[in-house]
Image (tube, rainbow, N blue to C red):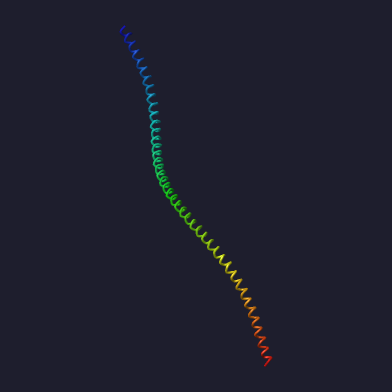
Length: 154
């Protein structure tokens, strides 16, 4: 009976060994699956690191671009202030020019009036000269007639 009991124990022991082997193989499969998962996770982490490095590079580039943009905006604002100053100066110059043109118009009107008056004077002088010429011609003719009369008498 001890043999039978020993045989049963050995059979049970061997059954346990078989079960243990099955569990060991299943566990080994799980560990291999986990190892493959870990490999995938490592590859994913490497990709994530690469992506994070790219993102960090992009963020640095973005910060640089933002600094350049801020600088450009400051320059643009300075240029706009200069342009406004130039426009104000130009408006001042235009106002001065308009004032000068208005003064010139007043001067031209004055000159035009003087020219009209000079033309009237010239017209009167021409009439007076014509009158003087006519009068002188008449006198000349009278003197000539007297001379002729005197010559005839002599």
